[in-house]
Image (cartoon, rainbow, N blue to C red; front, side):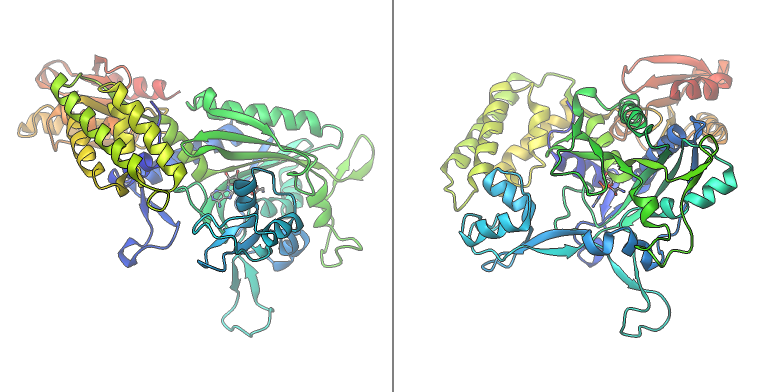
Length: 545
Ligand code: GAP
């Protein structure tokens, strides 16, 4: 089963070196994360797979790496200075700050459309603070999401050195449209791809790496002749959907959602969000918008833009005139994609039935946990949390031992851990889980942080160690991410590699010394085959696809 709670992923990510809370030694910095040794490999592989699919595998794309700091005017004429803001409200009682649109939807069930409807509802005391439950909320006001900084050694106190950390990579592509067009001698349609950091002072970051203030985008601006935009848009929607499923995302966990008229940005003609079923619910993974000619026009010299020194346009040889191309924008998040691949690949399953009496003991503990939850009043436990924990406990108790993996998921749940008796449930579940369950990250081999791990059957047998180390070196030299490990028995080493998604493990045994063959064990089927050492690199590379 894929991850049932985000906490399972957070826990695995921290335990196995994928993602750490940032600056933890100083108490951290809210919602900022550092990618650890395995996380950086995974995210690099996601970015590499994207670049390969959208630049190398096509004939109509170029790459770009624009600066994070840009002339402030870029953000004036893109519209970000004026409009890139979220409506925000404060609770006068508990001082918590919330996104007004999210609070409105959670409180009323209706879509938020504008500040006025929020303010009317807040003044009528119809909206509740999600933190303390009071109805004393301020009017909503816009909060600009761009981080400011100062360029140059002296802060003059006025705005002369003001610059922003870019809130999207897209504008770097628009303002380079002419450079790419001229230097690469492109004809329409063609696109430009870019991967890079973006920064937004989000009011409500959260859900692990899903929404953070510093993140990485993978954006494409695809330029087409007006009139050819709708077909190109649909082609990109299809291509981007296929990219995720080709890399292993389960189709049932991915959907396309058409943005409604109300949601569409002012420049967009149509926008389709690709959404993934994260443990916290369906959420945006990527937006694919038809931005029309808005951006290229906005950055071109005109009566509305006297600051630009040129025009961003294209000479149409057929029509013998200049035109402003339309733009299709598939805009993805590298961190969100990485998180989605992690959640989807997570698989915890029962591999061995525990003794009946152990399962019965665990069932009793889960039932007493359910009783303890049942007894809590609304002050001690929010009703929605109570309902969720009760439903989970009842379902798990009825299905044990088959539901042991779900119980291990619940063991990471922060709310469950607030209940004292849950400590016992957790301890017993983890003990039983150690022996009877298996955690595997079923990542696509091309995304896995480590492609192949090499073990000697015995670490105190120099000839096995030497051969295993030589195989690791050869595989690495052949361009495969390989590691050597001899820090445990083979079964334990397999288990560790399964947990981080390594698709292939090689064991060097005594037979290897005689016939130059090794066993290659497949993570998913657990099948083992003997392969000649000379054929390893080519065989593994073929499996990467
Ligand atoms: N240029 C268009 C644009 O930036 P967006 O929907 O604001 O559109 C595109 O962002 C993608 O960037 C999102 O689908 C998401 O994957 C990622 N993204 C946006 N804000 C993010 C945040 N605060 N944290 C992590 N990823 C984010």
